[in-house]
Amino acid sequence: MLAGKGVDKMEIALLMAAGGTGFTFLMTALGSAVVLVLGHKVGIGIQRAFFGFAAGIMLAASVFSLLLPAIERAEGGPVPGWLAAGGGMAMGVGFLMALDRFIPHLHPDAGGPEGVKASWKRTTLLTLAVTLHNIPEGMAVGLSFALAAGGGDFSGAMALALGIGIQNFPEGAAVSLPLWQEGFSRRKAFLRGVASGAVEPVFGILVVLVYGVIGPLMPWLLAFAAGAMLYVAVEELIPQAHLDVHADFGTLSVMAGFLLMMVLDVALG
Image (tube, rainbow, N blue to C red; front, side, top):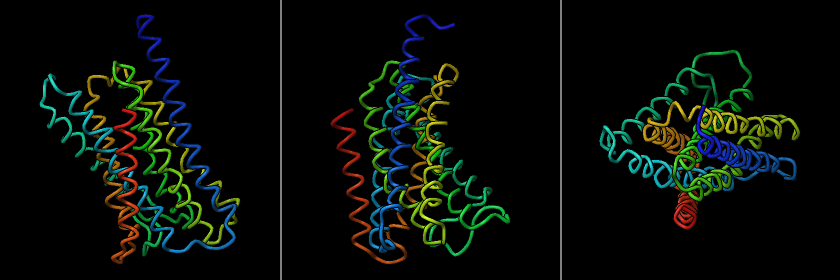
C-alpha cells in the first residue's frame, strides 16, 4: 500500500477528478438542454459558432494545459522533452484516426457514415461521433489532476476542467440539435446529448486510479491526450465551423475559444 500521505494525495486527486469531469459532464448536459428551449431550428451561423468556439478551446488546452506540461515533466528524464511530447502526440493522433477508421459513426452534414460498415441507425452514428471524441477530453482532465497530485498545481488542472466544461456546452448542443433536426423528439435528442458526455467521468477517473502504474509515462500520456484533442479540433470541428465556405464568423469563434482558454490557463495556472 501507499504511504498515508500518498493515499491522501490520491484520494484528493480522485475527488478533484470526479468533480472536474462531473462539471464537464454537467456542461454537456446543459448544452444538450438547448434543444428543449428552442422554439425553432438553429441557423447555420450559430452552428458554426458552436463548433468554432469548441475547436479554439481544444487547441489552446492542448498546447498550454497538456503539451507544455508534458515537455516540462519530461525534463531530466531518460528521453528529451520534445521526444516524449512529439511521440505521445503522434500516438494520440493515431489513436483517434484508428477510432474514426474502424468504429461506425457519422458527423453532422457529412455525406455518409465513416468507419466499418454497419446497419446502425443514422442517429446512433451521429451520437457515437461525439462520444468517441469526448474520450480524450476526460483523459486530459483526469491526467491533469493526477499530475497535480504528484506534486503539480491543482489550479492548472482546474483551469483545464473549466475550459473543457465551457466548450462542452456548445458541444452538447452540437449533438442534440442535429438529432432533433434528424427527427428525434426534443426529449430523446436531449438524452442522447447527455449520454455522449458520460465517457468523460469514466475515463477521467480511470486514469487517476491507474496513476501509480502510469506515473512514469505521464509526459507521454499528457501529449497523447493533446494529440487526440488536436485531431478532433482540426479534422472535425474547424471544418464544421466553416461548413465548406470562407466564413469570418467561424474563424472568429475559433479565435475566441482559443483566447478564453489561454487566459484561463495563464490566470489560474
